[in-house]
Length: 356
Image (cartoon, rainbow, N blue to C red):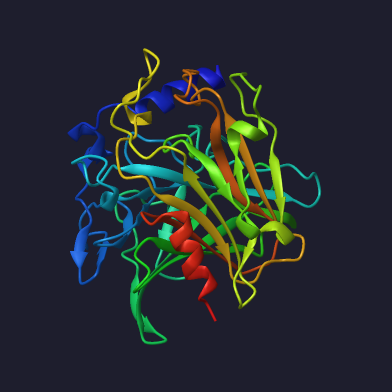
């Protein structure tokens, strides 16, 4: 029954966006408003919880009619469609691993203790203090500031407590001059169970059909080479890239890049019954994780899928990366960056090599 509900939820995610889906508790949500270089929730009215760049990446939570328990990434600059608010390219899930049972919490799949619906509730704040009420109608607007001479937009996102006792949250920060990436800083509250890891997992690589993983020394790992014979309808086993094989900058930061092996999405044949939302037709882009101060035990985890999640329709071109994440021991306040950049991997690697 749980799997059926998740499948229906996935179909809801990838269905046509109707105006009714912008309504919560009978109140219509206003789209984010432009404010200088930013977009952020409208003030004093029911509003969509979306923050980010006017001309770059945006991150949202609790989208009406979509799965909960996810940070969803909107990239209108990739020109996927005219629906600028719902060009969802990928998601980031919060997945803490407790140090006692070693169970991995799943923010997207665990049922909420508040209403029994799949997906943990997220709530936003302008401070690192968890709000007492999960308000879906009036999200935090985010704090605009100037840090080190750069304009910034910062918002805190809290998740309700997990079944394994983890109680975690993240700080999202957007920095002027970096329109295609955002910063995530991870925390556990004082009430949280002790953690082994707090994994931030990018969960939907199959939408853009990411098949190339870029590591150090020009190494390119192809999903079709890692799992050449995998044709099951579930997730493949994880492939692991250790820190020593990641791309490093001169400051010691660690990078890993993923990219599709397709250059033109316009003439792709999908299996009959494939939901519209999986049919990406925007600009190819490079997705990446970056850790400025990696733990010595950091590794990159990727798994793949031969069929699309929940609907089990074959992915055109074969198996592609799906979950894409950095995995390391938990550190309070650890900083990561996730980017979705229209530049090619070779050009991003050139930029990395210039970092001093």
